[in-house]
Length: 230
Image (cartoon, rainbow, N blue to C red):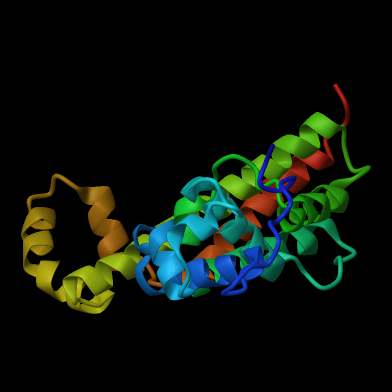
């Protein structure tokens, strides 16, 4: 029986339900990451005995599933955009914004599909945006390609934010600290392509980089959707 099928036990002293348990777990994860979440810590946050939680959740992995599904409610758009590109763009940007609010989400993106009601609704919204534009295999590869892009981009952005906190150095501070070494290495002439990127490239912020890369991926998907069947 999955966590989605299992009925909740009857209410007892210190009223509990999955909604309260999940809210407490998300609060802990927002404060300290997934490593800060355990059934014992969630129970303490709710002022309940740890064994009480096992009537609702049998393992921490189930708790993570419930947490992801709760955040999927934030990702799900209020209305389905009419254009498939706008639909996929909206879902990608809403996923990024959710991950910036809940950084731990980045650690759980890209795994097995979320089977909760909100996760299934996100999948339905994604697939229905492409319905009828190509055969189902092409649609599935298109969805996987877009998902792979924004999952990787979000994980990279969150990793940079974590590095800033861990080192106490902003991106600009880190560049200044690393600058003399990088300058010496580039001066050897062994890295001409990298030197061109460092000295001639235009630096953009994370949001602009995400949006540009996403548009390029959507352009590639569009080319596949308009190809005549073999």
